[in-house]
Amino acid sequence: MTFIDFINFHIVPGVVLGSIYAVGAIGITMVFGILRFAHLAHGDLATMGAFIALSTMGLFGASPWVGLPVAMIFAAAIAVGIDKTFYDYLRDRPKILTVMASLGVALMLRSVVQVVWGVDSTTYQRGIVRPDEYFGILLRDRELYTLLAVATIVIGLEAFLRKSKWGKAMRAMSDNPDLARLSGVDNRHVTMLTWAIVGALCAAAGFLLGLNNELNSMMGWHLLLPMFAAAILGGVGRVEGALLGGLIVGIAEELSVLILPGQYKAATAFVILLLILLVRPRGLLNGKVL
Amino acid sequence: MSALLSMQAVRGGYGDADILQGVSITVAPREIVVIVGPNGAGKSTAMKAVFGLLHVRGGQILFDGDDITGWAPNRIVKRGVCYVPQVDNVFREMTVHENFEMGAFLRKGDLDAAYDRVYGLFPDLRAKRKALAGDLSGGQRQMVAMGRALMLDPKLLLLDEPTAGLSPKYMEQIFTITRDVRDSGVSIMLVEQHAKQALAFCDRGYVLATGANRHEGTGAALLADREVAQMFLGG
Image (cartoon, rainbow over all chains, first blue to last red; front, side, top):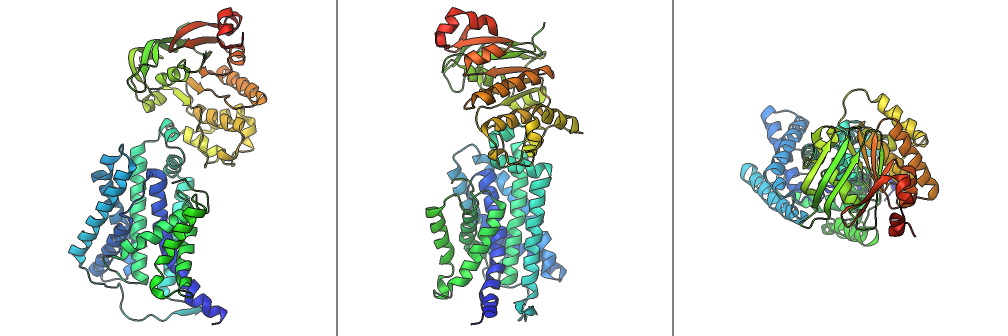
């Protein structure tokens, strides 16, 4: 295998997959950092987002990309609704109750997806797409657009968190919740805003996974482990860490087939998660201690 | 002179037990009042009572003409009282300037004057405005914490042991800055472990013991009091 083949067959798919993980992991790390619990419904919310995009596409009969913003808006509203309906009641109770509640929410969301869209696999677009060559690197259009979409989302989110008043309030709440409250930051507003953003990120992750792979009702559930591995690898509460962690997990999964049978690809994330918890539990970029 | 803050026979605690057994403290406009006392005397607790962090079960807290007893902290902040906790009092992963921005979170309009005032009080921080607060020295971090609180332009600033763990050099600096803050028109209530130094620099002081007033007077008078000296100033 030549070097360029190595890039094309392992690194490129790894980066594409990793960037999708990253979008999901950013949401997980934000929930962890600001609301301080592990959100197990994250994957199934992504599934729902992917299917909302599918229906939107069917409605307008246009490119699947039309579905992305619609799915993001819907998933944001769903996430806020879930918080108001379930998590909000558990706010002052031990966080493990919210974690368990989110598992229940995950099952509910998946069931809704299965009732509305069925259990069969489907795709946004049929047919084989031939990749184009860019300086020897083979990229399909959808892969190129996936990377561009992820870059846009990450840059936009970073700009929001660094420059806007409420973005700073979210960072403050993640950094020192007591002091944020002393400064007059309204916890409820930050919580709502966080869920809106996290919901939108979920939908984006689900859509991009569906675009590059296929859609089925379990797709998000299977996304959960690599997303958590990525978030913890990067350091809990760190957006840039989640991005880095996502890319590492994605690339590691694609490289694992060099030494392991393909069926073990999914176990790679698990190994990474175990290793990072053993060796460096704060993550690569010094996140919060879990 | 009418008092800005007046705590009258305040009783209360965090849970069911009363830590404060009747504390009365007044702070006049442009005055530095220090609360000292042995460990467990209820110094910090008395301060938290002002800021609404305590279940007050008896007595009254009046501030600038309002009865603020039982108000929630965010309402008290809006009324013009800012509180600097003893620990975890900065946003460590945010820059110095962002800490000040967060301090002014509730303020609308032009903040240039507020920034000028804070950087004027803490000139060292101007050069460090883009540094993360968590990377600063303990003394500078304390300045960031005070600056954050001053961004809201409070009438009363509550400082909980601002010199804890600081070197003598920084302790002097914090006291000097506290005087500058007072001279800019803010009243200050301050809890201190370093009783001797604090009484020497304050306008008036209160000595608390077991949750109640023991002595009060000007700093100089308290320093000269033999009983106060015996209590905890080391004879």
